[in-house]
Each structure stands twice: as structure tokens, then as C-alpha cells.
Length: 463
Image (cartoon, rainbow, N blue to C red; front, side, top):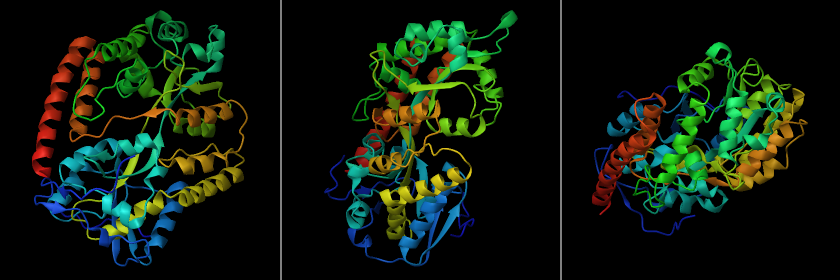
């Protein structure tokens, strides 16, 4: 595989549908999605395929990239390393000089589709024979928009409960007090677990992980931030207001969000001096990949894990992650489709997991798994896990269980504006500028205006 800086000079769904003309938008001209004839599982591709937004430098990425490049039959792969630069990407599409494939967050796909920056993948899926039933339903829903699949899901992220077992024991608590199954017990635990001698916070009892986890707390309280069809904001429903009041109240019980955030920001999050290892954090919900980090840097930390749970005791996780999309105007869409397909096949994920397993074995460490957007791959990888003893086996068990109980926010043409509306509302509350209901009332108005405008534009263009 070659890596290079490439040419930019200017900054479950039915798939047997008639192709929709790609919207007039960022590209500046009405385009059409690639025809089915451009996609053939037996075809070979030459030239160059350029990819933006993907690093793939570890064995999980590099193993699959090698397989994907091999599947093209001769085409060279050039990758612009680093996260997707949105302005650079949109400018490249507008200039008619886009990459062939992008690696983006799933919650960006609706906005890209509405701007005409990416093409629907119906023909790609049909032509290459991609079995979409292998993908996680929540992940697939997040990239399905206007009755079309617009991206191929890749990694999946879910949250589980992580806690310091020693601190819980000293306070007479268990993980059941902080796993979400009883909100009043979480608040009580935060008060017991936090350390603030002389009024100076030195240890966080419970971090509810705002602003990013508001969808998780809201869903646990029986509410969705957005209607299933992606058209109606529900940001100021009583259940969402209550969820925000609770999650903010957890910080208030420890002296306020500013103090908690200061400790959070100062922590050696990815190092051996992390908050759990130094007894600086009692508990929090967190994405599953942090289990692997903790096992690497602080294998003797006194940890305990569980799924995140609803007040009814049911496991719950907010599914998020990455996906592959083909830009409008891509010069080599057939190769791009093949590459995305191969990167997410069960066999590719198994090969990558085997590479990780071999590396971990050589290091004398357990293989704790990889969560993908492919449920069949996850089932195969789960069989490859090796025991690391407790608490790590319980942590792995928890995130595989969480992966079976996920939800996601529906794709919509105002993805970015909608996310900004609710996150800004949460931040105003955290900063003491507004009360929860007032902030969410304001966010509801802003979000609905953005949705109405974006949907109206989508309808006009597609009709």
C-alpha cells in the first residue's frame, strides 16, 4: 500500500429501488448515482483510488487495507492520513476534484447526502452483491436516508459502565449502584465517592459524560431526541428534560461541572496515570474501546465493569461509529465500492482480528476483541477471545452484551445542525447560562427549523 498526499488544490432497507438523482448541492451540478453496470464482483480495477479520512496504521486497519487493495486487481491505493477534514472534502467536491472514497462518522452521512456531496450506494450494493443483512441494524439505520443506503458501516462503538472496585467497596457500594439501573443511587454514589477536602475536588465520584451522552440518558428515560423518520425534533420532551436535569445534577452534587471537567481534562486518560489507576474516578459510562486501553496501560487497576442499564435494568447502548461513502464525482466508484466492501467483509475482519490476536499473544496480553459494524464478524471474533482474567473478562462480556442492545439517532439532512443544537443546549446548562428546560426549549426551536429547511430542500431537489 502506498500513502500520499493527493491532488486537492482547493480547499434493513429495501435496495431494489429506482435510483434517485443525486441532489444539486455542494458539487454545484446535478449528478446521478453511478449505474449498476459500474459495479461487478468479477471486475478488476486499475489506476489509483484515493481515500480521505482513514489512518489504518495499526494491524486492524493495515491487514484489511492490504486485502482490500488486493481485491481491486491492480489499482493503487493512496490515503490522505488523518481524520476527515470537512471543509477540505466539501471544497474538493465543489471543485470537481473529490477523493474516490471517504471515511466519515456515521452522523455526518445525512448532511453529506443532502448536500449532494456523496452518492447513494444502491447500485454499489446490488452490483457488488453486498449482503447488507450482515451489518448492525443500528449502524445501517444511521446511514440509510431517503430510502437509500449512503454508506457502508465499519467500526461500532457502544458504552458500558466502568468503575473503580476499591472505591466502591470502601463506600459500601457495588457496580449496581452506578450502572444506571437506579438514578437516585447514582447521585448518592457520586456524593459518597467524590473527594473534595477543603472544598477542592480531587476525585470525581461519577462522571455522567455530558454533553456527548445526552442521547444515552434520554433513551434510558424512554425518550428519543428525534422521531424515527428523522423529521421531528423531540429535544424538549419531559423525559429529555428530566434526563438532562439528572445528568447535570450529578455534577452539581460534586461541586459543579467546571470542577469535574478540570479533573477530567487534566487526567492522563491514555496513560498509566489514568483516573481509575490513581483512584481519581469512581465510575462512568464509557465506550468499549477504553477497556483495551486500560488493560494495556494499567492492567492491575482495581476495575469492575457492567453494561449500562436502564432504570428497568435492561442493557442499553448508544451506537455510533464510522462508515465508508463514495463522493459525488468520484473518478473510480467501482474500485471505491469494492474497497469498502472488502474492508467490512467477515473474512477481512477475521484476518485483522487474527493479526491482533497474534500480536497480543506475543506481548503476553489477552485479546479482548474488536466491535465492528458487521454482526456476523463480531460473532466470529468473539470466538477468538482469550482470557485476561478478571476484571477484563467481565469487561469484554459487558461490551459484547451491550452491542446486542443498541440504538442510534436516525439519519436526516440536518445531521450536523441537529447535533449542534442539542450539544450547545447541554453546554449552556453545564456552563450555568440556562436551566435545562429553557436550554432544550431553545434547542428544539433551532433544531426543528434546521430540520424543516433541510427536508424542504431535500424534497425539492429529489422531486
